[in-house]
Image (cartoon, rainbow, N blue to C red; front, side):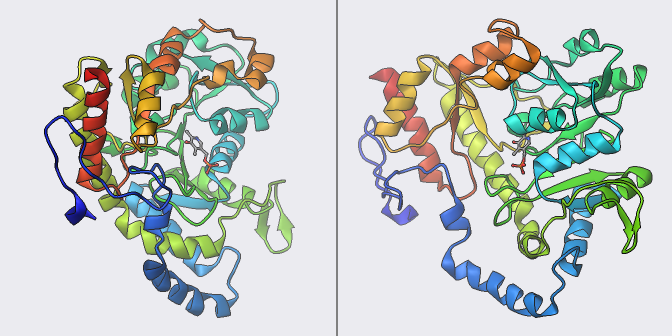
Length: 391
Ligand SMILES: *Cc1c(COP(=O)(O)O)cnc(C)c1O
């Protein structure tokens, strides 16, 4: 693909080949990641696994959990149905239930607050900072006698200020569940996302940085008691074949998905590093454009760019222009979760209650930065945005 790239005159765009979906820079990479050639390797793994019949909590799942725990640097990793379940079960294992409150951020993917609500607890929002994560300085005034946990979200592959948050959590004796679904291998001072809280929740959804062929999630923890509870909880509360010690649910990570996880997990550093490289090119190129603001890039943090988001003037027009030029962009999200009808009914907030989040909704734009982009495609994004503001 790279060889087809022709650089034309300085003000016109690089000539890029069309992708199978008719765009020049695609949002999704799945058709490339799981190309038919690579799939033969996975099918070979299936061919040897399927005749074992070891489908529930099977050996490949145990292997995947061990690899995942090693990758993140925790004692335990437990495979569950989804990232949402990883959050929900973590809260339940920590005793969160009806009438309780859990503090989280005003802008996140619906799953964070859905997981809280499913326990019977109420989400309590605080605003975000310009790195899209919880404004930790607002947490203390959100704590009430009903608060039972804090759920920071490492949004877009950025990191919440965990040292400051843990200080508050400790002072008020509140457990912390990290929503790390967008932040595998992100860290602060080398300490990984998911290892700061009582538990960390990861998603293996196809569009997450480490993915499988459908839904899947992982809970990590260093707490032996919690790991034991969670291990039972995801498997009907069974302590053995014939002993039910609690009422749980069926939220086992499919062993077939674990086969794929085992096949892919070795690539996760490469996937992450390529996203970081792409983000660097975008930061440099887009950062030189006066109408674009790059979010803060704090030096002691490793950001893993699950989403590459910047702030743009005339955002909606820019998106339209990018679409015409074949670049798929998105907004995460045009209506923040706290203003969605279901949450307005539950929590009663109105626009203006979380001004930073509201501002973001108006000017944030997400560009593709995944590891299946060529450098030419990344440069094309910069050129296109330049052309928009010049033209
Ligand atoms: C993806 C995601 C989840 C949920 O993960 P699923 O595996 O899709 O259930 C939770 N929180 C955030 C921030 C996410 O991006």
